[in-house]
Length: 419
Ligand code: AMP
Ligand code: MG
Image 1: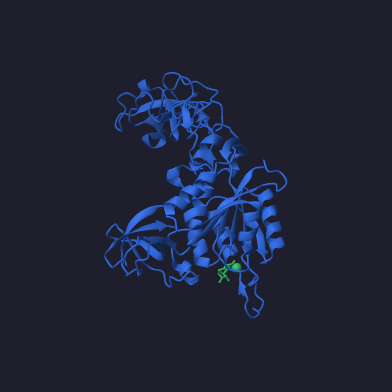
Image 2: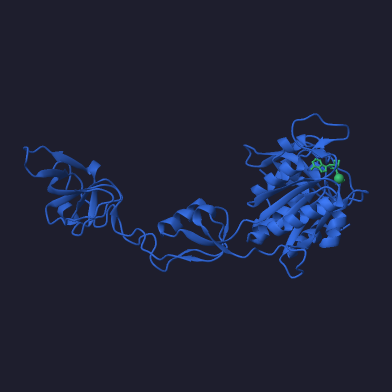
């Protein structure tokens, strides 16, 4: 048996970041930026008003108050999207809407709430009374106040968020260089597996792992490729793995990696891949097969495709995915070492989390909530057997139970927040 950290390090060693590509920005949410972005423009591109009101010369409004307002002549209206076209002189104002350019000649904007319309005869010049003074620059957003050409916008390595995409759009960019999402092929193996609603024949069960693993692949930020359900047949498994390797950046298999007589995944991967078969000191998910296969079976120099051979038991496959595949895949997508795993927090156990001393780290499916005492609390999500799918439904976290005795109520326990 090897320690979790050793197995993890072995996996991460083989999960090199994918080559950067330029993609339309609409497809890059959550991707890692492959290059630093520098501003090419002034943002905002022109001085504009932060409020609806009147562009004025600040000097004109000196001393204004409700009892002695300053009366100005309104010479034009500028809406957002218009070029200014006018320039107010002394005693003049320009009605202006939020986002519209502040005209040359004006140096401040009086918000409409600080003015009163003056009733005048039909056809006479429009007048307003300003009831409080403004200083130079009031309510004016200067050109380049946010970004100037050459300003750093974000560094390479940033995970592109909604905000990043907005800034790229503001700079007029339609594409950005990113580490792409990994295309991850998922296949199930086992003669006992079927799909869909029909009645089960003796010995059959429905394939649940493929659904779960494809969902976890998507949740990790990858693109899931469904490679189907493959019988325990050497040729069929071999074909599925070769096809997957040619189409995908990584493969996730479940089942067929134990010591059983029909565990052909092991046989096939040993033949075509460079695999390591590990017994990791964890429970569930002790067996792990990890290695690489060539993208092209006939070209030994071809790209190497990491393969995660996860155990078949449903809970084991999930735990193994979380501990090995998720960090490996995220590393392939350029995520930093601190951003590979789920968030790890300390929580108070509200329940007893049973375990025995056996030299392994246990991972218990738990329900975690943030309490009014400003601490996380966990309780068991149900059956802790590696076949207990139902406990995966309620669980939103995995508690890390270090080797030793049970975690008693009130004890502190480390927890990965998985949802
Ligand atoms: P194996 O690793 O192939 O020996 O499978 C271990 C256990 O997991 C067996 O009880 C299998 O029936 C079950 N199993 C394997 N693959 C799946 C799957 N895709 N969905 C649900 N159960 C599975
Ligand atoms: Mg099997």
